[in-house]
Amino acid sequence: MAVTETLQSISPTTIVDRNFHLAAERLGLSSEQRKLLKSPFREIKVEVPIRLDDGELKVFNGYRVQHSGARGPAKGGIRFHPSVDIDEVRSLAEAMTWKTALANVPFGGAKGGVDCDPTTMSKSELERVTRKFISRIHNVLGPYRDVPAPDVNTNEQCMAWVLDEFSSRHGYTPACVTGKPLDLGGSQGRRQATGRGTMLVITKYLQDINRSTLGLKIAVQGFGNVGSHAALLLEEKGCHVFAVSDVYGGIVHKNREPLPIREVMEHVRKAGSVIEFPGTEPITNDDLLELDCDVLIPAALECVLTKANAPRLKARIVAEAANLPTTPDADDILERKGITVLPDILTNVGGVVVSYFEWIQNLQQEMWDETRVNSELDRYITRAYREVAELASQARIPFKLAAYQIAVKRVAHAEELRGV
Ligand code: NAD
Image (cartoon, rainbow, N blue to C red):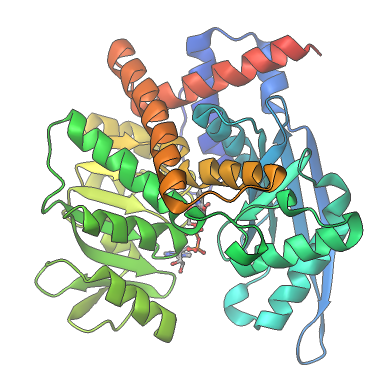
């Protein structure tokens, strides 16, 4: 399907639509099947009023979209960001449907968010936003309905408030949310899971092309939960992560040598940003994307690789740790340039896989150790990676199309079995 991208038209919706329709075309799905698969099961918009610390009343908008429950309870993160709106949440919810299907875990897809700006808010204001949002949507959540998790600007603490707010109404229900702190029923390895999955997908691809991880030059946009853990685990494999960034800007090692990732993480913990880490030069987020490197890892937000910057990309591999970071025109340009794109629904699937393990542990009152979590995660990622790589190679199609084809086929089959 031809997509003509203007700067105004770039949105996460354009990306999921194009990926879905390309896969549906290859699967020969009818227009009725496409309509059923594309339309969200449920969409909710709620008012989230809170008092700020200075006494002012602020009214935010909160959204929850449950895209599909065909293969199991809806599953997806909660994001706090000023750009959150119904279109963004809807497309991210749909992407979760394809991701859970590709991972072959028994969930559907959902997403939620509030259009607040946590960079300007205190911890108690964030707590009030989280609790108010959950109080408005709790009746459509639950272990067998819809299970939230962390996403951009939400963390284990927020998930603890989600658990508390939900449980105060429904009784103690640890399986109602994942990504919780360990002391509240969280899983070992969940915090690192998405970054670990990213590392595993990159290393499996490198094995396939007979490339060593040693000295591999890597740049990471977005040094949050996903980006920082992916960087740390890739450093452990001998890769050289020489540039990283966050919302305040980026840093690159003065001599393009590896950054000590644990020390950068500690710097972020103390200073709140990667900027001004000793021995580095500042770099803008835009320039970081165009650095000469082996692997570029976008790990921040959607739509950062566009037709405007794709022609200038010098990376050999793009590993999409963020959701929907590459626009359709950029995908086409990268393919023509011979740059391999490891797609988001595979590269960042580790988070939802370990969320699934957390949900199992909560329902069965079990506690797995980290070795078990990591080895099960490796098993799930290896299977998903192999399925995608084999289809891509057999059909001579990009990894992204192969991943979507597998995922859409599974959900279409589940819908067909259920009937309308
Ligand atoms: P996070 O809030 O922990 O980190 C986000 C990082 O991106 C931060 O360093 C932030 O400063 C930076 N950032 C925000 N806006 C930016 C901008 N405009 N330019 C550059 N950097 C910016 O979030 P996260 O959980 O690490 O999520 C990152 C991405 O990974 C998102 O796309 C998210 O949807 C996706 N994802 C997260 C998980 C998970 O388990 N947390 C799972 C799957 C996918």
